[in-house]
Length: 78
Image (cartoon, rainbow, N blue to C red; front, side, top):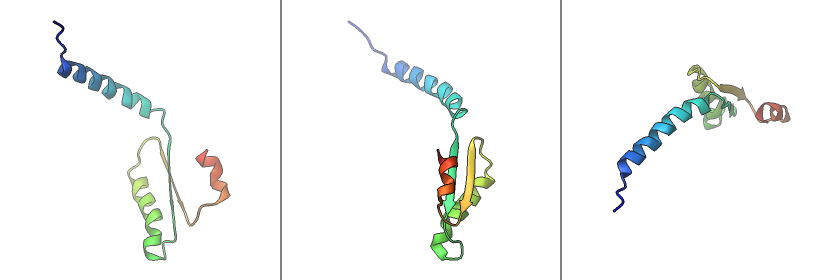
């Protein structure tokens, strides 16, 4: 009879994930673009959230605050 230890298999899988994710995040580049008009109530939420995220100073995260989306953002997005 073949005995399968599911708990052990799950533990090994999680250990592999835990060691892989930090290595993967080291190569990840994240761009946050907060856009909107800060003078118009809820339309200003994007720039305010971008400002809050920028203050966290997360490694690999670039934050841009803009009034509107423009073609010039194509290069940083790509």
